[in-house]
Image 1 (cartoon, helix red, strand yellow):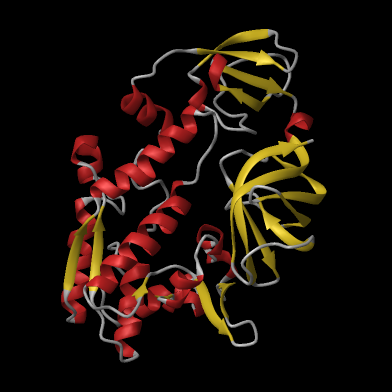
Image 2 (tube, rainbow, N blue to C red):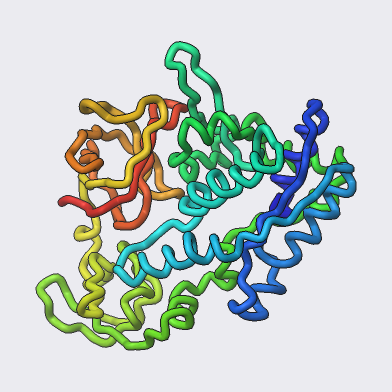
Length: 353
């Protein structure tokens, strides 16, 4: 229970359906991160526990707080920082889901006698008897679907997880919260990364690493264009906030961390029609044995595009798009679909022009 409306309604629905429900919040905030994080309204602030406990009291269910600060620091925050230092753009929510919520949190829940864990994610889990496998499917409310950040779930995780909100829209969830008389019915959704409440990644990384060196902008030929902030402040495809005038619309087309250089180019330079992905997970089957057609998303907010995925050595796939994609970004995830079914996904290693 994050203290938000989604997980609160998920608990209420399950209790109404006859489950014996226990509430739990993962304590993941870091005291050393400063007062802003501790008192902020993010899902990882102390207010989250207060709101979750209020909901648990109203629902008359037992409530726990699991201290997972060290795990979160090591697995999510350190990973986030390391990826940016490598010049990549990570998605910490995907790592948190894979390693914290549906691995460590699940183990803790089972250890205290639970049969399942449940969250407020908008997604559907179904068992397919013909495949003898659990499948992950899109939420009925397509605009809220969160399967992109859940593609890493294993069969064990899927078999032990419930997503009660998969059949509802956000408006319906808020109406249910009012029906259950939950105090979080009108609580706004969190929009930022939970451990960076001001959404300033660069400032956070600078504070954590002590790296403060300015970098340089160069063009695609290597010519110096001007001074930049440290390279980890940028991501592929970025145009806003560059603070440089060249007489043309320029975009970040590459990041060179070893040289502290940010490569700028015109918009055509940020399109590519293929990528290589690694660290793969597939759901309807264990391993991709041959080329298949899918639709694919290269980031959470991206539109799906038709593609072929081709198996490669070393647990990698080649993803060939039928149309060029804008700003394929190393470190982000590419997720594959077959209509409403999540086929799987992986981490983007590099784009291929």
